[in-house]
Image (cartoon, rainbow, N blue to C red; front, side, top):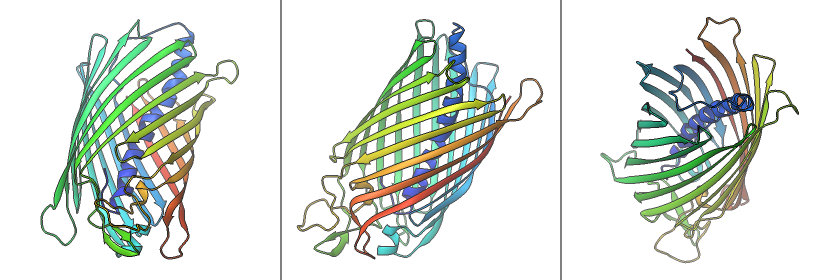
Length: 386
């Protein structure tokens, strides 16, 4: 989704919260799954554990600072349905390159709510999710449904799902909404246990967007003059990702190593690749350390130009549609509180990530040189299973 100049950072933080939360649980689970798999045991589909989690995050980079809390609660009812609710707040202070070169810095707040329900039918897990986020000039809401089915005694899991989202686009100083956008997302995946210590997965995704896909605040350049950004009103993107997780076993006790690759391409002629390597290691019974390196690169959109030399139907100077590379190095440290009552598991987690962005064809109008910046992400959260 392409939004206003300041909204991109909040989108990033929301996706970061979901990604880190899912990835952290997945890393810990992969270590324990490797140990369980080595014993030759297998279990059927089960509901997720009851859980409560509170997090505070800080994103600071490229002139954008986003901070705020997030709360997550998951509770099962009669061991048949698991319900979860999530509340997320971003307070954004924006003086990004898009803002300082075309408008004035500003502050705004974004609030998001997510609700989901899961149930297990034999070897299948069915999930329904609802989400809504609001900010002064943008409202987004979505509904999704997913199915995951275990076969071959739990050695293989086949999943598929879809999400439909509707956005209302506004502009500060203009009464009412100025346009809207609709998004469809279809996904499918396969997870396979190849050996007691090796798990692989493959996932595919198709995203189709229709409607207003630009920003009412962003300006493009034609012959050096500022003109309103004009993006196509349709876009279809496809992505495939493969991942491997290995329990290192006797080499390093209670540790795992993971590697993944993602390839993306769309009808705007953007092509992107993501490589990630990571590992996790238990230090004693209470400490879990995780580290990862992620490298991302993409080519520019067909209608992107830093300074167009001809007038065309579509034109954009959105740096997110340009040619650029980013590198991210992250570390997470989790501590499980000892001597908790039976059935309770409380963890304290701190995470830090540094990201480096380098643009190949987007210039800083203040200096005339190619634009680059660093971003820092800090998260501190406490989670409890019960």
